Length: 576
Image 1: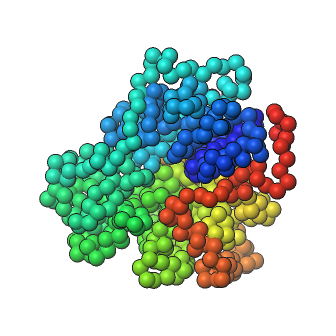
Image 2: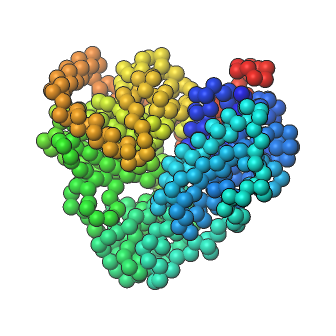
Image 3: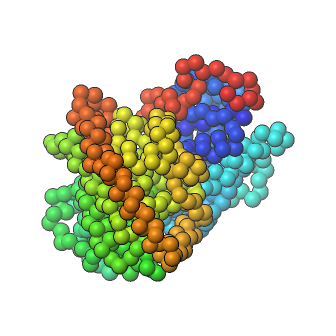
């Protein structure tokens, strides 16, 4: 079928649905929900047989839903209605939640149900639950709904007739519904309320007597203080005491500001706090905030780095490189870089770079320092002659994060991972991290040019087929990590490991003789210098709008296929 995806933004859920619908043979195109007239024009151009709306912030106009079947993906159980479904579920401590695919009608979230899926609701950040459980459940439900629609025989169930619907209409959650009382709330309550607001809109509160929104909460098992007081700092995070413990606050957003590491957003106040450093890189055996952690098992080293939204600032790149150098000195021959649960890496830290443009320093200079720190990290990974290195991606990766992963000897992906191995959507950035070395040697010159030109997400299956990755390991997060450990342990015990390391050193020496890595880096950075310092401000404009979450003014042409020059509407039921 020809399916139009109508969405507020091309987020991870929309990306996954587009990829999966295409894998099932459907013709898809994407339109951002900018205005009724724009949507009406997109429908007229594409002539969809079905419209799927994975992520909207307003109602589809009657001029569309009254003439076309429009399937809304609602992140709530059957019967749940309202714009804050996941927020209420997390804050109320629901044990089970779900996703419902329903048909758009005049009353919001009240149309007949085409499909649904449920899942255990993990105690975690809303942004994490959305990227993991909600996305997985939505994928299952949407594919089922599309199959039912295409059959022409299925009749969706009116919500009023569903006796098993236990959801209800709930209003938009306001900050007054989220409010913290640091003197009375225990750690579990603080975590639940902060988790329910994570990603967007953040939990409205104060720090140091100044209003802000809080994000990125982590429990602390040992340190204590007077409830409500900020008692310590660690790298970018601040520790605030609760009634029965303490909570690390990783990120904050000040009024009219941007989301930043908490200790950076309140730099002057944070500088007066005592530091609470960890003892080296080893994974702590108690609950705490630790963005870089190392562990060993069966002769394999595992380096974890849990960076918020996958963004890696200059300081984080430098610290991770230090940890990598330390890990390489251990008596191990297999080293696995695990990344984080939701993201492996998304490259340079655009928010921190944007902050440099706001405090009187230079965003171009910070961009330059950050990309060089990423390159230093990638180079350290490439130069690992004594270890077979593996990038094990449990979560998504984008831009420079993809090519940092490709700097490892092998790349293993969880089967639900999405990659965005390109840079141009950020103001035509050329990119670095030695991608001009690592990508063509894996996928070929023509495929490398196509990946960079098309700027489309790559599924785990697509990455394996192209040669970008080396293996797909299925399952949920915990089972993926178990499979990674089993596979890595088998490598460490393999009689072939010595020969594999020898062959690796020979290939690296041959490649270096043909063209030194320093030459690749200089060529890439010559282009990046133009992006950062040149006459074309596209990168700086794109970064500003990305960080500020500016509303889209148009749908990018590489997504809206129906707006490509020369687009011809194929006959219904026939792919173009």
